[in-house]
Length: 286
Image 1 (cartoon, helix red, strand yellow):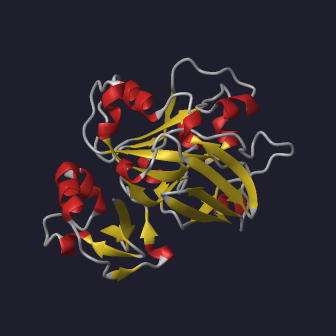
Image 2 (cartoon, helix red, strand yellow; image 1 turned 90 degrees about the horizontal axis):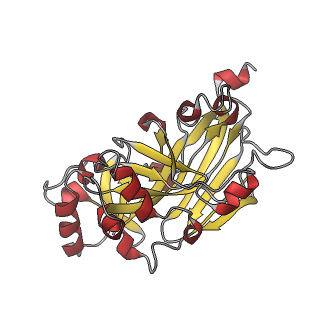
Image 3 (cartoon, one colour; image 1 turned 135 degrees about the horizontal axis):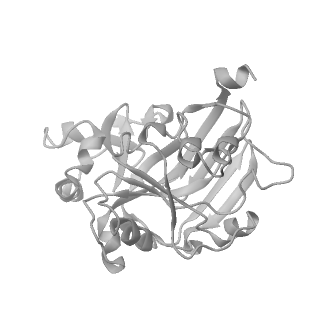
């Protein structure tokens, strides 16, 4: 199953088009896609039986984030060996968890304002939680996953590294628009192997990152088990699972995001995000 936030309404992706969920379910499920996650088990049972055809023609720029208002947004640092190596860091022995604030979430085709010239990109697989998870064993963790989507963990590196470092880690990653996700949420059963997905991104036509989720130091099941041992994971929560090597900050010279850049992020089986960048008032006045 593939879930879309289309024109602000919960929709099923069907072929090259979509179906409005509230209309197709005769009001059983809401038009607000965030409400779908609160009734995920019943919704998936209905969706699995649905055999209708697309009634909506998709226009890419009308697609919003598949989880517009997540209760919690977690992210994982240093979760690919290649990324650890490019940062000259040591491989972590436990997941390095930080947060992105929910208001930083934006859609897969939006224009994002740059607060400075020090904004970096990080292509990531994002996990969406489908039911409350508390002290989940690793071998049960995937049963708590609603689906997978694509994300970019954008980061303002100067804020991130402000001493005593890193002082403003979460704030540096939570400027408006710094958590683009989409274009679809895809349930795990749609993949031949949901633990081995390619993820890549191009910046203004140049390939910057290309990795596979099989290379995660702490895989999805481990992350869900670890996080749920500390606090409840809630329906609609996001987990940004980490980025492979190729970020801009570790390059010589550094390659940060600039006005008019286009960042194209792809995971086959989920789709492609295309985000463009513009200067904010702060950048214009620098």
